[in-house]
Image (tube, one colour):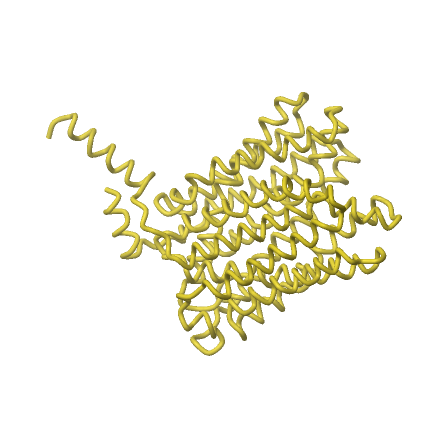
Length: 422
C-alpha cells in the first residue's frame, strides 16, 4: 500500500469519527425540539422584566430577587414528587400538565394585585416547571436512538439556546406595551407547546403512554451504583453552580465592581457566553456519539473551569469577554455528553423519573448555593477567589470523570452508523 493511500484511509477514519453520517432524527424528536424552542422563547420574554415588575409593588431589590429565587426553590422542593408522578402516569401526561400549570401561573402573574400574590403565583410556576423539565428529559431519553443520543441532546440544547436568545428581544418589545404583557406572551407560548406535544407526539411507544404498567422503573439505588451516574450528578452540580448560578448572579456584579463597567458589560458577557456555547454545540453532540461521553466531559469541564477561574483575574473588558466566551464553549462541549451519559445509564426500555429528578436537583442545588458562596468569597476575599473556587469545582468534576468508566456502549445501531460514515 502506498503512503498516499494509507494517509487517505487514516483521514477517512478520522472524519468518520468526527463527522459520522447522520441518520434523520425521528419525527417525535423534532416535535420535542419545537416544544423546547417555544418554552425557551416564552421564558426569555419574562426573564428581563420579572425583577422590574416586582418592584412596581413598592418593594426593594431584595424582595424582587426573592421573586426570582422562589421559582428555583419550588423546583428543588417538588423534584422528587415530579419523578414519582412520571413513574405513575407516564412522561407525556406529566409533561403536558407541567406546561399548563406554568402557563396558568404565569398568566395569573400578569393579573397579580400585590407582591404576595406575585410570589405565590411564581412559586406555583416552579412546581410545573420541574414537572415538565424532568418529563421532557425522560421523553428524550426514550425517543432518541442510542447511537444518536449525544446529537439529540445537542440539538435539544440548541433549541433552548435559540429560544433564550430570541426571547429577550421579543420580550423587550412587548414590555413597551406594559410589564404585564410579556407574562401573557409566555403563557401563550407554553399553551402552544403543550398543544404541539399532545397532538403531534404521535409515534410514542405504549411504554411511554403508561410507564407505570409497562416494565419496572429504574431505582435510584441502581443508578447510584453506576459510576457514570455519580459523576454526572457531580458535574451537574458544578455546571449548575457555575453556569446557572454564578454566571447570572456574580458576573454582573464583577463587571460593575471590578471592571468599572455598566450593566451593558454584563449583557455582553452573557451574549458572548451564549455565542461560545452555540459554537461548541454544533459539534459536541456528534463527538459525544463518536469519541465517547467521558472525553467530552473531561474536556468541557476543564475548558469551562479554567476559563471561569480566569474571569476573576481579568482587568479589562476585552479579556473579560474572551474568558466568558471560552467558558460558554466549555459548557457547550460538556452539555450533550452529560445528558447522553444519563440516557446511557437509564436506557430506553424503562422509566427513569426518580433518577432524573435527583439528577435535576443537583443542578438546582448548585444554582442556589453557588451564587451565595461566591458572594461571600467576593466580599471577604475578592472576586479572584469567588471565580477561582467556582472554576475549581468544575475542574474537580473533570478529575472525577477522568476516572469514570466510559458509559457509551457500542451498540449494533451505533456500529452501523459509524460504518456508514466511513
